[in-house]
Image 1: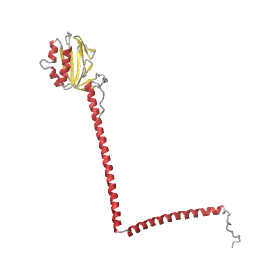
Image 2: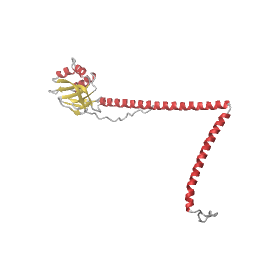
Image 3: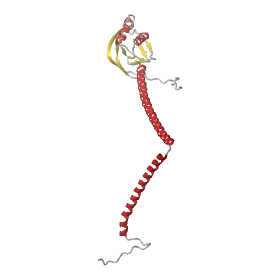
Image 4: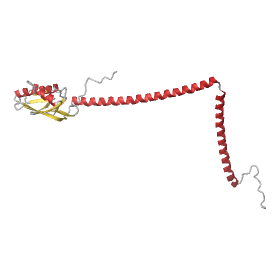
Length: 248
């Protein structure tokens, strides 16, 4: 038998020895965790029991009302989902329509730039060489060339390196002609985009451009081209009086 003297418990108000505190800490933690788990399980069981007791003790009218509320809530949720899907489809459709409208606007802008002469253009057409060895061609002769080509479907052209537009002016005297204030000299070179066959036919009709130029001692050489580049540009004038109409 051990003859060690018994260890008395710590008196009230005295701190336990450090070794005793280390031994008691795991036990305290374990007790705390078990207490929390038991409390949680008890709470869940009480809630479940309460719900079951409420439903078990409810009258038939109350049960019908509860079912109706749940059904109504489900209907509202389905309606909200349907509304959200409809809104998403509308947004997708609006984005698609906006993209199509933007693409259409860009296409029209490019076409107008070609017609106005503010952008280069490429396509089939004619190359004309107009010779005037005796300097007999007049302003009206060159205007007839431009108008005849336009009437035959010409989409854009440049005349001796000058882009022809809606406001193009031919001025000067024979031998000293000008287009939009820029002097030109024979032989004149005309590059025009459009249907090559239609434009050549129009130039060669009886009494047309080719015959009129020949009557003044000149000549017109017409060559069809599968692809030409019209790269002379016209400056885009600034509007002095007109402004975009933004009113609805």
